[in-house]
Amino acid sequence: MTRTDDTIRWGILATGGIAGAFARDLAALPGGELLAVGSRSPESARRFADEHGAPRAYGSWAELAADPDVDVVYVATPHSAHLEAATVCLEAGKAVLCEKPLTLNLAQAREMVALARRRGVFLMEAMWTYCNPVVRRMLDLVADGAIGEVRSVHADFGIVAPSDASHRLRDPRLGGGALLDLGVYPVSFAHLVLGEPSSVAAWAHLTPEGVDETTGVLLGYDSGAVATLSCSIASASPTVAAVSGTRGRIELPHGFFAPESFVLHREGREAEEVRVPRAEGGTGYGPEADEVMRCLREKETESPLVPLDGTLAVMATLDAVRERVGVRYPGDG
Image (tube, rainbow, N blue to C red; front, side):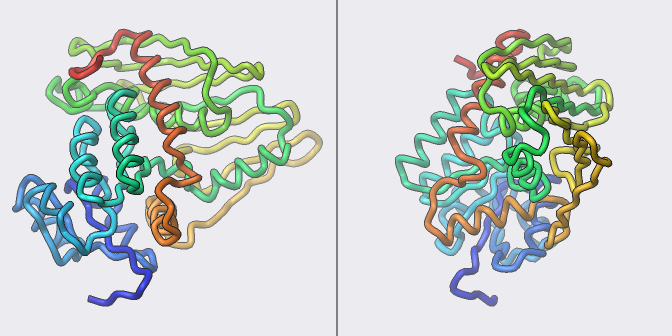
């Protein structure tokens, strides 16, 4: 197994579809290496390791976290297990990249962040949108005043999910519903552009199981800006986003959370398509993995692109939305 001095060795915790997508993108990145996979099923861990070329497979999360050669663990479980899985890794001194949303609620997120900070261990939410080079370019243009003062943000994310009550998206015990699985993207996008809102309003249609099926969110800001957001597991929406200002707007296409381009509209000019190619190709996980590896090489315990305080602010907004629409999960305070 080859290794240079700055090679970052990864462990992946869980073996589902998102873990596989991350592993494939990681394989295309220089300076990163998939060393191990951990699962509560030894058979699942071995299959995943064989498929993705990981030399080590563990039948428990603790064994993965105890591997002295693993530098960072990507936690890819359903979000209902994020706190437990990340805690195992952080307690073992392992850096953690944890899938979104960070936890089920703000109290759990604060617990995880406090543990990482107390131990001095790196932690980042895997909000790939914040690391996407197209989105970073959009933010630069907004900061430079290309569209004037931002007055509104729009974003939506909807899919048609299975109607089976036992499906994870409909199970309150697994943090089911549209908001945490899909709505985290529009809410995080609004936070990225406008920051933490001063007002949160929301409405939702709930399933018989008590999770949100379709949710609308209106965020208000002291600047006078608003964010109109929606998510659904009952209908496929355009899944686009837009940032509108006093002198123009930026439109992000379908799949706004991991875009390859956007369209810039400015007064008195032709619409301009802006593209920032991803050097590593893949499906979009590369930039967040690159950011983690940069932070680890530079001995940073938090990422400036995905700051933990920002993650906590998003979780606070998600909690506020759930409070307003009446969705509660086991373990909520």
